[in-house]
Image (cartoon, rainbow, N blue to C red; front, side):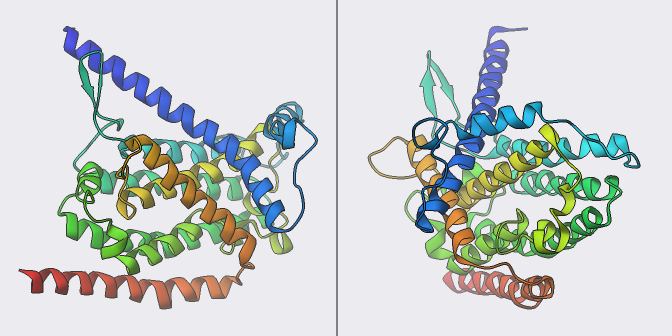
Amino acid sequence: MNKELLVYLIIACIKVLLVFGMIQITVISMIWLERKILAHMQVRLGPMRVGPHGLLQPIADGIKLLFKEDIIPEKASKLLFVLAPAMAMIPALMTFAVIPFGDKVKIFGYKVDLVITDINIGFLYIFAVSSLGIYGVVMAGWASNNKYSLLGGIRSSAQMISYELTLGLSLIGVVMLTESLSLVDVVTAQAKLWNIVLQPLGFFIYATSAIAEVNRTPFDLPEAESELVAGYHTEYSSMKFAMFFMAEYANMITVSAIAVTFFLGGWHGPFLPPVVWFLIKLSACLFFFIWIRATFPRLRYDQLMHFGWKFLLPLSLLNIIITGLIMILKE
């Protein structure tokens, strides 16, 4: 093995460890931040007991879940029941492999791209990998041998089909303008003007579909406690439940990072280092998720389906047509 290849492998391993480590840290931080932000929006304090201002609350929750009894229902499909939490968590982490979070930097004389890997079909990779996460939810619902869990899993699969379609179509306009499926090219094309200016309708469709895609309020029907107890993870406890909980926040981070990459200029910004700009924009998107949760009530399931198929889908197709017409007229 020659020296250049060895250095490349070492740098790649370091980038993977750093990115996945930062995602885990962000997930833990988001658990605390969401509880505190929601509390302040509702004029209360939120976690305050464990550490200053409750900062150690996520660690306390983690310890509690770690030592809780891990129960598997007697008539559950045990293999699928155990695999489901990992199936929900892993795709969210894998998606970050193609998301650029900064410009090239020079380390020990070597130029390093601040992206784990830049592939020319990054757009397709994101949807191929992220769509696997639904299997974990459906497996959890079916393997639990619980009718409420099964209904939650079925709801989630129907919701994913409905909103992943509009999610993908909302990004087609950006791909048309960029003329590339590489996410690095998408960010580079926004050096002077962010795509949210050129694609405001696409951004609205993406933001709405992304909230539904990660089962967040007001689209959290797969785990609607008023109807399904806790939905697909009703029978889960201990660290298996924690993995579903972490998967939700990891998916929030993923769709937020995609929004930053496609619509908000990626790591571009004045004065501050590129990585800092990426993190600021990512934090703003995550705050938006929390704000939405504090603002809107949960929809009925028929409203959810109606909104996706009869409103967002035609709107996303209209956005593609308008983008195409503008591009033709500019030539």
